[in-house]
Image (cartoon, rainbow over the protein chains, first blue to last red):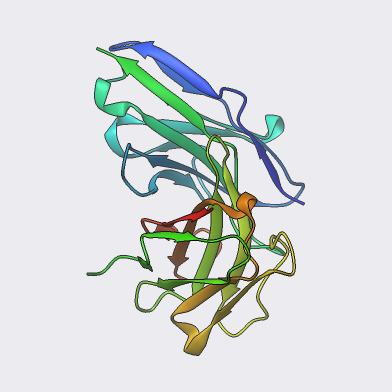
Length: 114
Length: 114
C-alpha cells in the first residue's frame, strides 16, 4: 500500500527566508507525485506534479520540487517565501498501476511572518 | 461554473440521522474521489470511482458509509446513523483518466454531528 509522510507539521518563517518541506513516500512501483496547496478559506489546488522526465519540477508561484527516487522523496522548495505563501501544503502520490487513488500526507501548515 | 461543485456547503445533523452529500464533478472527468479532512488531520481517502470500473472502496471507515456515482457523473456520499466522530469536511475531487492527471477539488461539505 502507498503511504506518504510529511515530517514538518507546522513551519514558521519570516518573509524572504528559504523553504524546504519534506515529503517521503513508500511504494515500490512507478509513482506520480504531487504537491497541493490550500490557502486559508480556499479549496485545494495543484502546486506542481512529477509524472516523468526531469526530476526537478517547477510549479506555480516560484515553487519547485525534486524527485529523488533512491530516497523516495519529493521535497518542496522555494528560495524566498512571501506572506501570501501562508497556507497548508499537502504531498500526494498515486501509482501508475494498481491503486490509482491519490494518497495524501498529513499536511504541513506554513506560516510566513511579515 | 466549470469547477467541482459540492452541496450542501454546511450540514448540521443530529447523531443517529442519515446524511447525503452531493458532488458534481467537472464535465468529462471520468475519475471522482471522496476524501475526509478532520481538524489537524490530512486528507483521509474514502472512495474512488474511475469510469465504469468497480470503485475502490478501501478507504470507507465503516459500513455506515457508502457512495454511488450515477451515469458516470454526479456522486452521492451517504453516511447512515451518523456519529460525532463523523464530523469533518468531506471533499470531492475529479480528474481526467490517467494516473498523472491533476485532481480538481470542490470546496467541501462541512458536516457537524451534534
